[in-house]
Image 1 (cartoon, helix red, strand yellow):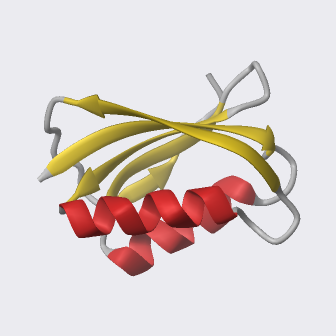
Image 2 (tube, helix red, strand yellow):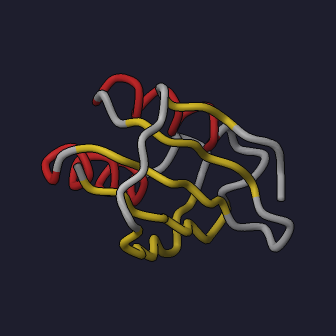
Length: 91
C-alpha cells in the first residue's frame, strides 16, 4: 500500500474538480481525501497499490471537463489507512 499527497494547480476550483476526483478515486478503489486549498490549488491524499496510484495521478492530470490542470506535484507519505475516499472542507 502506497500513500501520496497530490497538489493540483491550475483552474481547479469552482469547476467540479473535487467531486469529479472523488468519483474517479472511488471507481479505482483508491482511498483518501481531497480538499480545496486557500491558495486556489486542490490537495489530495491518495492510498492504494502502485497501479492504483498511477491511475489516479493520470486522472488528476486530466482533470474534470471544466478544469484546466497546470501541474500535479506528488509527495510520498508514510502509509495511511483510510475508510473510503472523501471530500473535505477547504483548508
